[in-house]
Image 1 (cartoon, one colour):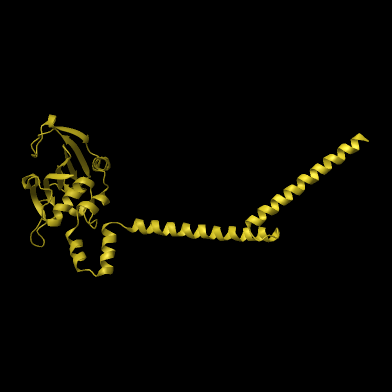
Image 2 (image 1 turned 60 degrees about the horizontal axis):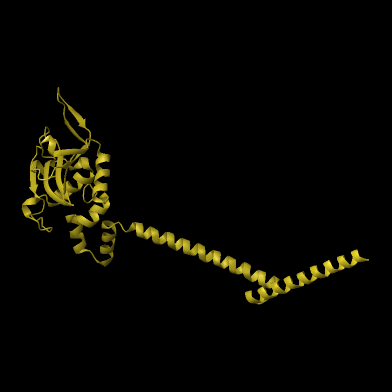
Length: 264
């Protein structure tokens, strides 16, 4: 996934509308976002993650909390991201839940969250307004449908996207300053390694159960050998064959006796 253009309105520290044109950086897949503390670097990453999945990069803030406290009440909080997957182009727009002034009368009303996802025709100029024939709607309003479609297109869930593509600024600072134990915990949080710990615990429990069943079978085997008065499995097999031979001899003798009785 390659971001091409990001437009943020009343989002995070940006009270107005800000546009980041990633295409201006050229074809180099690596770029650096830098600036003083509070300039909004992490908010750019938050906006990308929010546009795609409806969540922020760190997961600490809800989407509703991303509305700028400095924005004009009439300015709608929204994020629009144009991105490329291979040679295919897409645009996604998300609006978080928020309060906004009523269209008529005084007071506010609740804006419900919404999302739209479009596939763009090749060569479509990345501007705010798109020609109807240039954008094929994939999702027209439902946020859940938009998230599911993005997951289908990218092959990544929100957690996986955060793990492999973005590292929130604050977590990187914590990582640099942490000791080895804390660094392990941070990596565990960032890369969601808890699932592997749980898997390890499940496998450990299963190993213990198998070991317990093995001990039980061993005890039963020992009891069988003792009842048969033999030392080991090979001796038991020989004993079974001996008993089987004796049975065959007894059956043959019984048949011979019955035949002799009939001939008298």
